[in-house]
Image 1 (cartoon, rainbow, N blue to C red):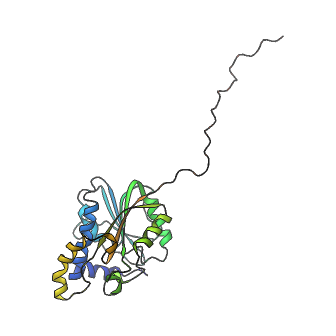
Image 2 (tube, one colour; image 1 turned 120 degrees about the horizontal axis):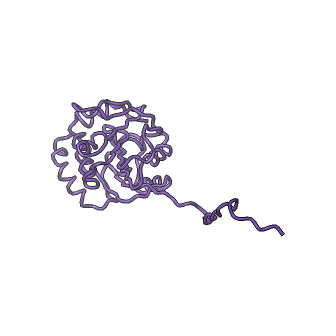
Image 3 (spheres, helix red, strand yellow; image 1 turned 180 degrees about the horizontal axis):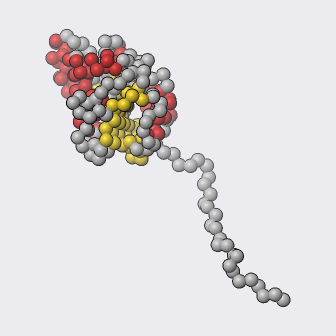
Length: 244
């Protein structure tokens, strides 16, 4: 079940905890992808808050939002790049995406397998995808006051297994959202310290969310491949034998 776009917007743009979550996720993404000059960057779900750093230098930025969730114009005071789309049929050409970010898309989808196939289709050779999902063992997945408390949370192993089944090769792992998901002043004030500490701990001790960077895996043809038979030029123009 997808969340409503109005609830997502209110959390990330109009609440103090949401803005802190946005800063944590965006900071981690910039560690992986510091630039996207001349590339096509696509976000699916509600990844719009994380795409802003790429608006100036990327060749194209697109924020895809699934129909059950709804869509909002984005970014504010700039030409709109958000698109309402069918969950498993994106209006993108095959193999044209360089970077793909998925946030609040996989864990809330009832057709996760088909969704990952669509991700694989649009990603180009050498392209990279970043899947962000709630951590099953984290505090954020247990609080339904945030978007990370809805849908199916994942463990690191579960997410990797799902990606490998759909021809993705997990490359790097990061954790995010180490601060306590509470709006109390004491926890909000300690949030930056928790985030700083969390970046130093192993990924297996991830905070409220897992971030897995994966590349598109293209398998070679299966079975024994025989070399193509060399074609001999037609003998129609060759001289014929002399009659006896």
